[in-house]
Amino acid sequence: MEITVASEEKAILQKVWNKRPLIISGPCSAETEEQLTATAERLAKTGKIDVLRAGIWKPRTKPGLFEGVGTKGLPWLQKAKKATGLLTTVEVATAKHVEDSLQFDVDILWIGARTTVNPFSVQEVADALKGVDIPVLIKNPINPDLELWSGAIERIQKAGIKQVGMIHRGFSNYGNTEYRNAPMWHLPIEMKRRFPEMMLICDPSHICGNRTLLQSVAQKSIDLDFDGLIVESHIDPDNAWSDAKQQITPETFGKMLDDLKWRSETSDKEDFVNALAKLREQINHLDDELLTLLSQRMKIAEKIGNYKRENNITILQTGRWNEILQKAIQRGSKLDLSEDFIAKYLDAVHLESINHQNKIMNS
Ligand code: PEP
Ligand code: MN
Image 1 (cartoon, rainbow, N blue to C red):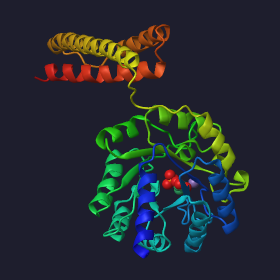
Image 2: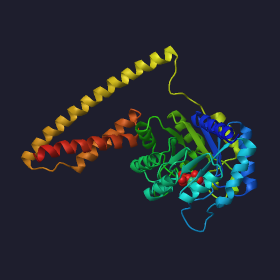
Image 3: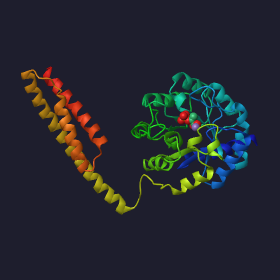
Image 4: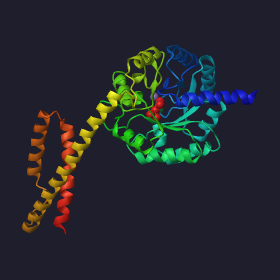
């Protein structure tokens, strides 16, 4: 009997883990049994949620803030799961967190951004997971360091965990910006390249830090072929004990899911496949031309390098560089290219050009 129940539970977990999109929601923190139960019930009622999340131990940036209810909240999750059928997930940062979560049948563990950043902590969690069969989601580190993120994944995999996924929750920055944690989309895209088979889900709540941007960030992640979402929800968002500004009610989240445009990576429709292939062919052709032109540009820069060497002139002339930049920004705005893009593009071209000239001048 025991074995049947256990294998049935494994099969359900397997099915949920493989479901696309995978939808996780729940409060930033479990606060009281009533709050958690009501959130779980209202989330389940939407019929769109797979996994209930709740922070039990909260890594707060400053002392004196609510640091989570601790182990006593785990039976609340267990009860909520029984009542709703939602699987559960909890953030773990120490061996004790892992042991307690396993004892109370948490289905999926996640490693938070402040833990991923610390190899000692990740290793402690990995050691506690040796011989355990449980899926683990790993958030990106708070700083934009892909080696730390990959390193944490490798540590957990080395401990024998087979089901590992990634959560993109953005990267912290200094000062006030539009986002609480800048999404820097090119970084999760690079992780997808490094781990093509691995699940990657988006956490718009911690990227945005507010409610207004949630929908557009979630949509962007879907457009980038992410595998699911983890969004914080609360029965009374304004009075949440942590992350009040970014939480939404379970019903608002349900509506948000309805309004998202779900897309798939491929389609079998012949018209679409042919049209896409043609357009991609054009892009390949243009990319090739752009590279040829850039190479020609570097050859000219090298010629200039020769003249500069003969006449003992510095490589960098700030006036000339400013002139190029200003002209390009003006021209770019007419061609519908953003100032930000032009600046980044020319910066890269300029640096490459300097390197080419440097080789000539010091050869
Ligand atoms: C959380 O999920 O509530 C949390 C603490 O997130 P992060 O680790 O992304 O800051
Ligand atoms: Mn939170």
